[in-house]
Length: 277
Length: 134
Image (cartoon, rainbow over all chains, first blue to last red; front, side):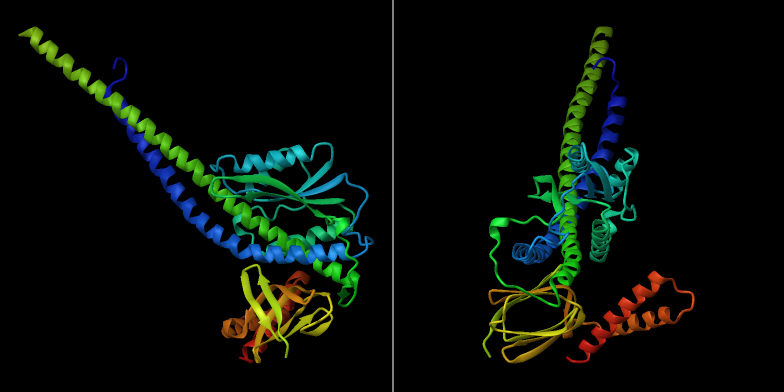
């Protein structure tokens, strides 16, 4: 191999090997965190479904007088955006952030970012932020989700925002995660489902709504957070797996080059000896 | 007593899914008892002791926040936290109670601190009360 000495190739192989070690380690860490996150999703899903069915029944059975059910204006939208704290997770962060930017075109968006990447992204674009105290997505607990829900529903009732949307990444499987937005408030109701059933509200319909909506939002946000966390780990695992494989390919290519160069050097030496004798 | 289907689900998983004969929970408007054949109902939950009668056996639990709903005879209890009496760590509840008392008696506590401590005190009291029932 002309130009590249065996020494240089050897150095490159060595640096490639250490990179590969890092990506391999990150992949394994992501895989173990993914297992935890998947277990959490499985536990949280029945809760979310139970909440959802209660709210559906409630919304279908009640009149549309509550501000939670109907609001005419729709230009001031608050997006609750769940992204990650760290990069190196394939398209996980950029996909969700791009989706929110595309959807909020032509409106007056504000965001409540969860995760460091989301905070940085919206700060650099000067999008107004409701609060940035949830900058560490990994630290957000169930209790925090309920605090967020209370904060958001208060702002909604006060008229600061006309629509509340939740942007998160749906965990389809280890290989497929899709970013999605979910409208939270006003509640989405299907008028055809109005059964006209008599439901007793304890103590009164208004009080039930104002007590239940924050609970419901908190549950939904927690569910979305679990999905997003699992998606992040899955995306990171896939990205790091690809990186490890690339490193393997490059090491194989470089080893071949190294052997060729070594062989060429030996051949040349023999030729010189034979020619000199 | 006629049994009815009861499902108790929290963010940490399903706590109970099966038949029960009676359920008593603390809602924001006071204690509420549910038996088979109850009319459709929705009520937000407060903080308090829940009693579930399963096969004639009374079981107690600390039940805080969330929603109770009855639809077509099916009862869904969706609380934020739900701990059966035997799962409660009485020592931890006691420590939490002491801590809350300390904050409440401090002179320079801020309003948010006081509100948090009050909620903490309530939770600790409910847990202590339920733990003593097992």
